[in-house]
Image (cartoon, rainbow over all chains, first blue to last red):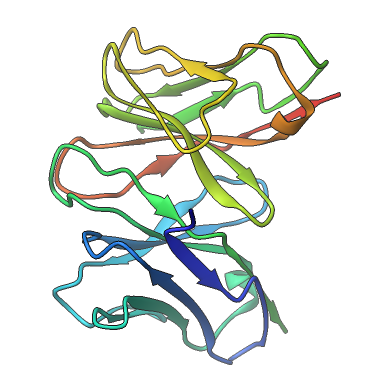
Length: 115
Length: 113
């Protein structure tokens, strides 16, 4: 049962363009939505995260947009650079701030930014 | 600096053999996790632990086991390796409170022939 659905599976963007990756979730109890970035041969690393009490969070060129009613959230990478080429995973969990934080991951998006 | 390490980084084994993958973290985190990463499936949770002597099954736990005898280590054992267990395995750890951030190790690429 895929609780977090991610699309597209792969994405090619020109340098300077906007990369957009979308995720949808089913469980309304989720209250923490992070995005992880993974470079080849490395483990995933937290990129940016949002909680459902805000509709948008921006950190540099990376923005999460969150639509609670639609149960969707997306990652926008502005002015995409070749160094952004990586696999991106969305995730969700419930019980933020509590004793447990088991993450449910999406299937990943392979982003290639062409120079 | 605190870190999370995995060993070996690459392993080739034969079907039916027992294999143990090591995970060691110096963050002093209570929570530790094992995932497998496969194309088209993303990261799937195998087992997790919320503290010493605590272990829990994840989404894809069949054929795997873990034990937690101290805070720093969570070894993953494949009791009888199968070709379907060929994958990249990641260990992660997190604080017990205050956020969902998980810190991942560099991964172990396991091939079962």
